[in-house]
Length: 100
Image (cartoon, rainbow, N blue to C red; front, side, top):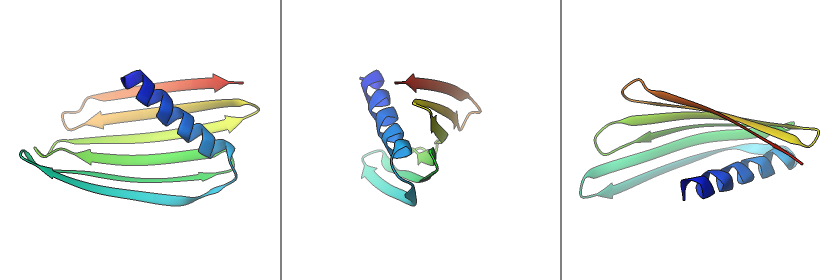
């Protein structure tokens, strides 16, 4: 399931990168439940074959996950670099390349 979701997100990002230059965008969401309130905030933009996205998730317990993504497309090849870091100092770096 995570692989399908990651692939779908990458495909959407690549579609944006291959399309004509797009405007900047923002997204803010707040969810409340029995454990408390969780928030999500993201910004992004695409221009000249490069898309960037920055997002912050905050759990009901106050933990944060921050993610930075950059996708670059040129000559039929798109490369996405992503870094995620959490409240306790851990981080994950990932790079994916897709070619036609």
